[in-house]
Image 1 (tube, rainbow over the protein chains, first blue to last red):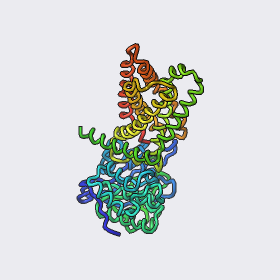
Image 2: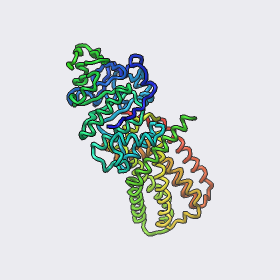
Image 3: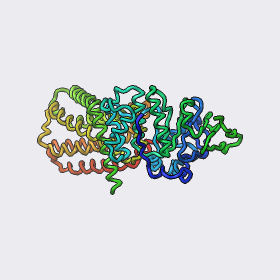
Image 4: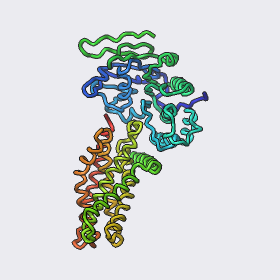
Length: 255
Length: 229
């Protein structure tokens, strides 16, 4: 796989210890129709860490990523990204966070190149033409760049959505099941990006069931269970039990 | 000022993206044009062959067709954003909420202008009304009416876009708000077609301008809340 250029914002430079933590949540809760998808998550992830978010279906992984991306608001509690409060500084948080969700958020009637050009305009990416071409090449889509996305397979859409992240300058990348729908080359692309982001000092939080595949890239793990952190492990990741009566303690997860 | 310029650039990009998607997919304009043509024909059948009666009813029929078709058009433009959750992605870009509103409203305005002018021409042909004699005030009325419908429609399409019952909710929410616009646009059109015998055309156009300003400002100020869940 060729070298991928990760554009790093000045805030991602410097020793990780001198930077504010990438993520801090305090008693973070999110209800859907009265049911808690997150039930009081208190978590701290230091800067420049690659952390897996593990747990069974419905444990709250996607909800946590969506709250951190500012796609949804927490019902209770608070959270910061790079020291910025999600509720108060949402506009600034959006400059620092990139989110790959289950949906790719692409426009079917536009070509892959047009989709990325639009994204580059939204990110105010400098030298957009060149960076769009590089992102398409990095995503392995240069040959199909002028095809409409309507004709793309699910895996190609996922690759294009990954390429879109390369147009911004995030200091925190949130990935929800990044390996889903991808073929072997696509999975290698994700591996390659995880390495590139880590080398560039970008924090990555990944919700995934592909624990074996992720293992070589991880600094830490967070296990969610029924909307709560049940265990953490690794360097630069800590969690507390929610400040609720009778809450179970957070344990050290086995590596 | 530079923030406003940046917002304007973002809004134009969003409108351009919608325009390219519309030109390729023809999600809004073709269906709404056919809808308004059918509506005008049905109105004509309902009123009968009396040409004087048709001409008298023409301003009202014109604006009913534009409002109904306009609701469909702005709704369709918003639905483009629901494919693959593009609206959520749009909301996650580091851009201002008013720029997103302005971009969607600009795209809606472009469709509304095309729709309004074509429906105006169709009314001239079907109801034997001489729209050419008063083209300037008629075009001004269509432009002001299109701005108002795009401004209101973009806001309420944002309100209803995630609802399952959006097809029912959109007209229920939009039509009462559009009542002043409908009244002013019909009166202005009637005055323009009659040669402004009572000198009230300017007042109706002023009412349309006031409506547009209020709705654009209110939409830009509140649209961001609709993007958050």
